[in-house]
Length: 182
Image (tube, rainbow, N blue to C red; front, side, top):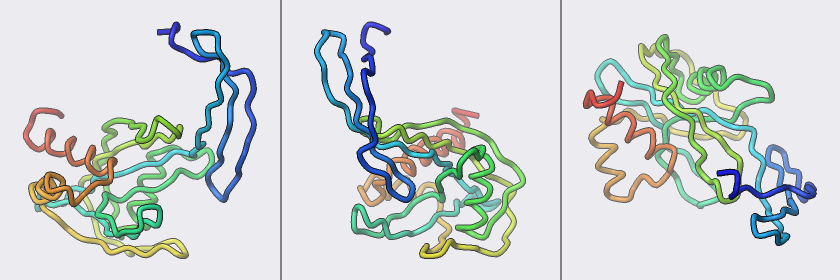
């Protein structure tokens, strides 16, 4: 597929925020023409599907300012510089939900917004959960809930859960629980 690749001629940072950066590249396309590409550099993230012994999953309600609404999501968080994604997953599960897991399984990596960001989210299944103390970051407000996987799938079907990482995680979980994927 090399014939589809673009060659970067130049790159410059056009915005630097607290954790996001926007780059603008000048590229030469396969047809030889020059174009500009803008994209967000993201440090990466981890999302976990915390599966309780009773078969339910732990999720969070969190207000997301970009879409101006409270979203139902699996817990997740961004990687700190140089941090392994499993370390991120373990830290975020504990901080956001007050649970720790003794059994972790990497499921897949996703790139949720490839049109304008390099963000990669690593998805994990977290089992053998124990309750500890929630430790939210400053300015982080969320509500932890427990929900049955079939109810989550119904909410997705009804269009009430639109977060892409959560939808993908729910579809993975459904396949695992049905014994179709291990």
